[in-house]
Length: 154
Image (tube, rainbow, N blue to C red; front, side, top):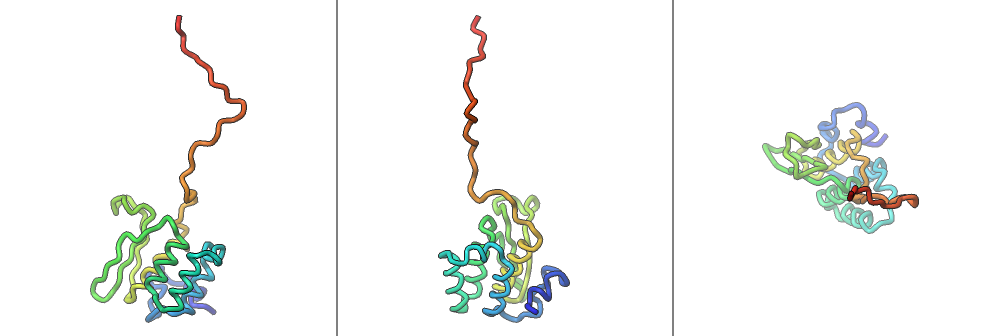
């Protein structure tokens, strides 16, 4: 049984990685297995970069690359260290005030695991929006559209 399948439904989100002292390549493999976007983009340049970071053991950079790959609209709102814990907050609208934003906040003694926990919490809670990643303009007018002048010049 993988780490994520053990903890996905039985532990609070902030406690998901409490018993994991440091990230490993196996942990990233488990996480990538439950990330649908990472699966579909397995042969992209971003996925290749993520694999290189994992192979190099650059855990924090790999966690941030996973965030960019899996949740492209989300950004790090806050990453702070206080009393032996790293606190990570992710936001879909970073420019909004804290009290208006539905951000995801997690903490862990390891910075990479704090970021990974936030990514998974956003993914598992379904906080990602269904909006397209590219702004959509108005659609083309229908073929029956014909402009008319409705002013009364009399």
